[in-house]
Length: 217
Image 1 (cartoon, rainbow, N blue to C red):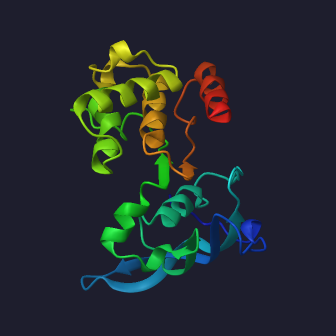
Image 2 (cartoon, helix red, strand yellow):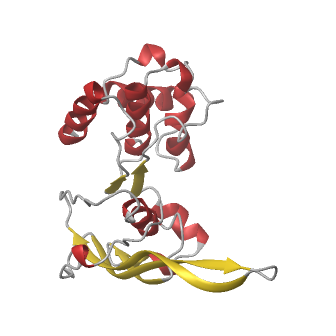
């Protein structure tokens, strides 16, 4: 996801202090090494000086060519990768300064829908367990019956039949797998979701269905 054209000034927006999410001067540089000693000879600037804010209920689209840093920016916001510098503030909390325990708790409020609906799902887990995992981890409901009821509800929300919850990911189409990923992201009722090109890996005939679903949600 690195390229010669880093995500930069196109996202240089004024920061709103009352926003749900505030990002200021966010950067990610990857070192370039060479030689036997692997000395650092330069850096790839994958994300460079991103500043923006997002309000509750607002949708912000990042548009750019392949390799410009869109996916990296989303992962930096969620701290799936660590930033080189800059700040990320979510509901007044400095995301970059959180310890591992506080960061795990924050995962309930900040979720991601990955670009590839197949590689993002554990092929050894049934759909019921994939969707139930974050519900159980964050202790949102108790008891198998309540967990199953919540899984069934989420599957219906994204247009899947609860009768198929014991199937494995490979038994579904690409569009259906992406719906599973959406259901998993929604399972914890997050306040913020990063959609990392959620339709790029899907057939054109399915893309509109997933876009309409996200719009409705």
